[in-house]
Length: 208
Image 1 (tube, helix red, strand yellow):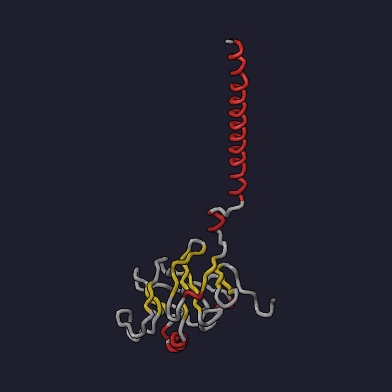
Image 2 (cartoon, helix red, strand yellow; image 1 turned 180 degrees about the horizontal axis):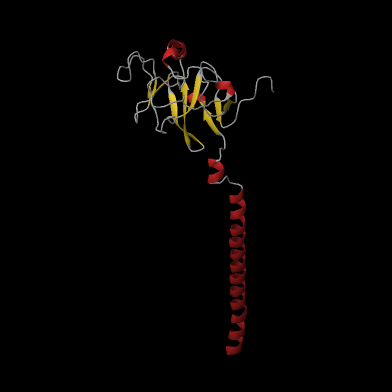
């Protein structure tokens, strides 16, 4: 009777052990697969250094109302300002050339397609690197014309709070400012009417 009872317990113990070993082996294999896959997946993700090197930044322009600016944008760790200028803003640009250090942007940094009176590929949209060309502070928006706290006959533009440099609505620097050059313009292009791509140059004219 005791032998029979002992015999009955043998397959039960073996079966439990077998299930345990199968589960443990499967679990170890799954962990190993995950550990193997993680470096593989990570290898497809852009590193911080790659992002800093200048991967393009896409911006939805449909979110910007006329007369407003988007500023919470970065490319190559640099702040980017995007202004949707009104017809009145654009019309004001030609009225104060004599007060600017570099009205034609001859000595300033911008792509060839932005070397014009509006300093833009599309006049409506101004795209700037939002750091002062004096010592790198962030200029503030002072878009309202006639703001005497900035200067007499102020046409609207940007004011740097650190050392008082003033820039118009094309990012051009006014005489008397510590900054010597106009605000810089990054390479950019458009994909359709509502997508701006910072970091990808617009194609040259005549090139498909």
